[in-house]
Structures are given as structure tokens and as C-alpha cells.
Length: 444
Image (cartoon, rainbow, N blue to C red; front, side):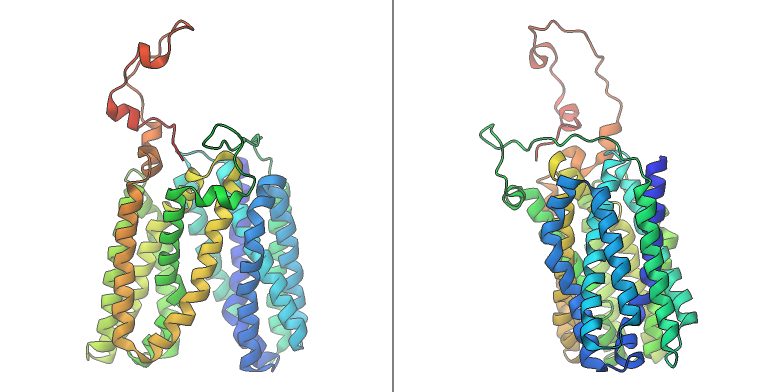
């Protein structure tokens, strides 16, 4: 990686490290430490998520107009202010307002970081760049959670204030590091409409007319709904109610999920980076369907408690394997589908879809996982198989290079020749169909 990429990755990892300090303990902090009650804690968590939904529709256009660097600096500053304010909040109004600022800041940082990574990479290196970001962010979240757990004390509110101050400091570091990055100059390319003129100014209209991107957003919603949206809600409720595992075991299962991601990421990367992205995502759907079947055995198989516990931990580990396969495929694909002048809007739109899934997932999965054990497992086995079907359909809308970016770096067997100006390429050279498919010119 170049110097710019290294700095972006370090800043991203440190911000994830800061989030790991507080996110696992936010509910406990509001409900018990500040003694504001479970209802207020639920409102704070909901506001944290809803703030992201409120700002993401406007984030993409700001990134494309002002540049991802300036947006990231502002977002990291806002997140730092929200973290400090939440760390000293003792009332309902201040806690809710602080959570809104923190949630909005952290939500904007993600598409801004993604756009910076896109600007500092190309189609041949983007797969590894996003895999590295996913690896470092999970490592940062895991280490932050472990360190934060050693510092907190429910009987000492000041210990939680320290966590929020550390989180704020990490956001400041992200902003400072980002400000030192020298972004490559990327001229704003005009988006051309179908009639050859300028495309409509409304970026949403352009995006919605791009069928491959719409299909990817639908696929992304199902992915996040069926996996991330269940981790700490439906699947946790199912594990404790149906499988009878101890709540502390959920922490072990989440640790197993992170461990698989950290240990398997680059092994998986070597296996998938030269394969078709749509096929890799389709395999993730099959792996997750098997994971849900294993979870079904844990709660419905009438085995021993030890076997049920092992099955639940294995479920989270299998999800981690699928996540490590998605990180080098989905995010780079969003970037490769985006027109040059709309990279920020495409990243923000996909982040919005993710946030919607994370909001709907717990609302649907939580009650089902707690009481409708059999239907819950069947539902999410079907959703996982739906990932496979949607991925294969998406593959038919992608160009060869979009689906397999390694083709862009394949050496051409055609020798470059000097052609008279009056002779066009189709008249001079007729490329084989297989080589035409490997051409990097991609239609959106």
C-alpha cells in the first residue's frame, strides 16, 4: 500500500478501536450506571441508529461535491463531541442528544472512508484494500471491547466516562491522520445521460436507474438482515431461550466470530480474489444456511447442553467465515459499479441500506428468536438461500471485469500497433469475444 492508504487504514482501525470501548456497554451505561432505566437506554440505542438513517441520504452528495477528506474530518469531529457529551451525560435529554450526534458522526465516517479507499486504489488492488480494512476494523473492535471490559466498573461512573473520552480521542486521531493524507487528484467526471446530454441532477434518480446497483442494494439488505441484524438480537434470544446457553457464552461466541475473521481473512482472500464475486457471495449464502441449520440443532435437536453450546459457538464462527468472504467482494463491487462522479453517493446509498437492515433485523428477529424457535430458524435458512439466488442473478448483470476484477490485470495477447487516424479500431483489429469480455471498459 502507498502512504495515503496506510494512513487511511490506520485511522480506520483506531476509530474502530474507540468504538469497541463503548458500543458493548452503551445499554448498561445508560440504564444502570446513569440510572436512567431500560426504557431510556432503548431510546438512546434507537436514536443512535436513527441518526444514521437521517444523515446518510445527504452524505453521498456532500462527499462527491466537497470531497471525502473534508467530510471525514467534520464527521470525526462531530463523533468526538458526541462521545464526550455522552460520557458526561446524566439526564435523559442530554443522553439522547449526545447519542444522536455520535450516531450521525460515526455513520458519515463509513462512506467517507470507503470513498477515500476507492480514490487511493484501482480495480486490481481494491479487493485487498477493503479486505484489509475489514480485518483491521474487526481487530480494533475486538481489542477495544476487551480492554474496555477491564476498565469499566458499574459502581464507578467515572470509569465509563474514561471509555468515552478514549473513544473521542480515537475519533480526533482519525481526523488528524486523515487531514495529513494527500489524496490523488480525481476530476469530477460528468455523468452522461442516455440521450448523450447531462444526466439528471438528482443522484438518486441516476442510482435507481442502474439496475445492477439496485440489485446489489437488495442483496445487501438481505445479507445484513440475515446476519448482522441477528447477532445481538434474534440469535442471542434464540440461544438463551431455545438452546439454553448462558448469556456469558454469547460473549464467547462473538469472540469466536471475530477470531475466525481475523485468522481466516487473508487465507480466504487468496482463495476468492481471482474468482467471480457473484459466485463467492452465492457460496456465503450456502455457508450461512448451514450455520442456521447448526443453530437449529442447538435449540431444537434435544442434544446435551455441551453440544448445544458448541453448536451455537460454531454458528457464530461460520458467520465469521462468510463475513471474511464478503469483505473483499461486496464493498469493492459497490465502488466498481459507481460512476466516477458518484462514488460517494453509491457508498452512502449502500451504507443506508445496511443501516435499514440493522434497524429492521432486530425488530423482526428478536421476538421470533425468543418465542417462535422453529419458524425463526426456517425463516433465516430461507433468507440465506435467498442470498445465493440473488447473487447468481446479480452476476448476470455484471460485466466480466466487474464480476472478476483480476481479468483487468491479465496481460493482453494483442500487440499494440500504430493505426492511421482515419482507421477505427473495429476496422483494424477484431478482438476475440473472450478478450472483449475482459476489457476494462464497463457499462453501468
